Length: 307
Image (tube, rainbow, N blue to C red; front, side, top):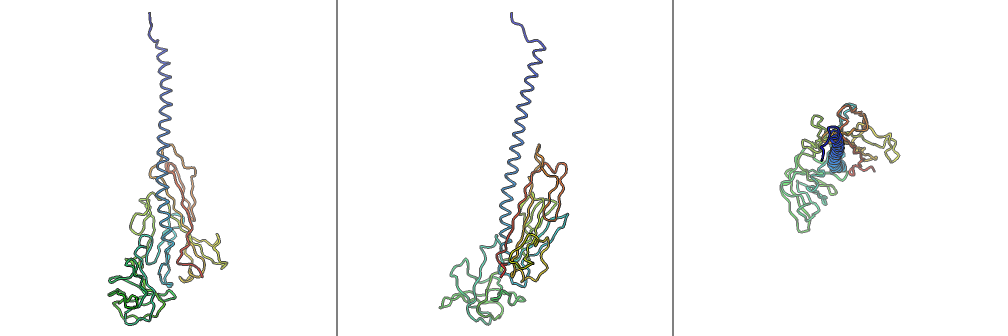
């Protein structure tokens, strides 16, 4: 004759089952948290690395075909409580570089008829309807008060490109005729952080999301030893004439602090304070459930090489 389970045996069995089930669920939820952590961190790193390389390329092209009388970079230091801003000036940056067109002026040009070299390439040749500027061999803008628009572009029997402008300018050989793309030449490309949405903006376009801080520092060879020492970095642009940036080594250090889109359960950021350049960010409570990385790099604007 078989007997059933006693209440004590049933309770023991249920207890053991509960312990095993709890262990299984604990492992499952831990793996879920781990998967979420890996996914959030991977997405954050990938997006941030791509954006970081693009902003470095923009800084590298600051001053492209820009007159030496203009400051190629303008910066706003947010101090200890706010992110920084940086505005770059030139005729084109990474998103517009494929549209850059320029010609060397090869002969004395008068009456608004400019004699240039000819690339014989529609992707590089300046054409009718383009807005242009004229730079001297010393990289100074000529006729800045005039709006210069190409009204004609053709090739003469000698193989030189003949460009006609809407104003009767006169230019010596050795200068440059450069196409101006959109309004970038005048207004520049501005990087700034919208703290309400945590979005790093490029002008009015979203450039990178989930950004917690954006900091910039500027290195300038104050002691004229041919290099930029660590103590020569400053949080504001050097108070020097624009053309001096072409005469001494100059560089820009960029810092971007990004964090995961969501807080990660069970994760605890190891620091309660982050220091970037001249800003200190305190992390308290739930803020430490976000993972973060800091991207930092130094860029030499190649159009501002010291001589």
